[in-house]
Image 1: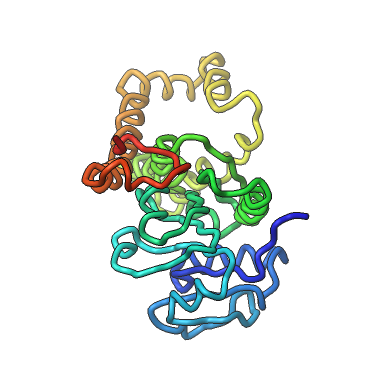
Image 2: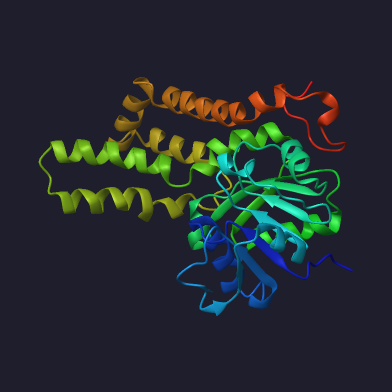
Length: 288
């Protein structure tokens, strides 16, 4: 028999990410509204999710007591200020930089999942890599996969360091394409093109053409090489961008994002003793 919680809760359910997750799960029909609890500092002015009534509370512990699975959708800096007990709960964190070991130690929960969705969850297009502690059962892992599929696509990871890296890569959502678009727009505007034309042209590159990469088994590297091999105007642009350090700048940026995610955990983990790391939890670089 598959594992199925009676109720699913979202702490931080009135934030944009919390509501987006709830919208995806209810809007897809994956979860009935009477099985969803949400909490926040204040009750929302618009309590409906996907046009359906759900249970709201300002008491996080009440939500934890009522739900078998709970998503923590909080700002990382707010997490340790809360007193949460989740001994008999499947705890799912979408917070950056707070390790499985820290989540377990702070909540007394052994069955912990970390995942990193991005802003495309609002259109059910998020890529959500995730990681589970050893105490999460096979049935619970299948349930997590099913839940994440309502947000978009997912992959289970085996190493927490890989989740730190993907926090900067896929967790960025539209940020990196937006930066590319900004540079393209600024250059086009400097040539005197009308702003509305520039906006539509850049949108055509970033949004209109991007579906051509979706599901490509050959991968983006091969797509880029085909344009280079054609030796046309696009190849001239690509060659110059590469020679000017485009790829190196991307590599340095991703390395900086990975380090920032790792730093969020390592300073706290280095101050703890090895005995404080829960048995079975994946260990990070900060653990002894």
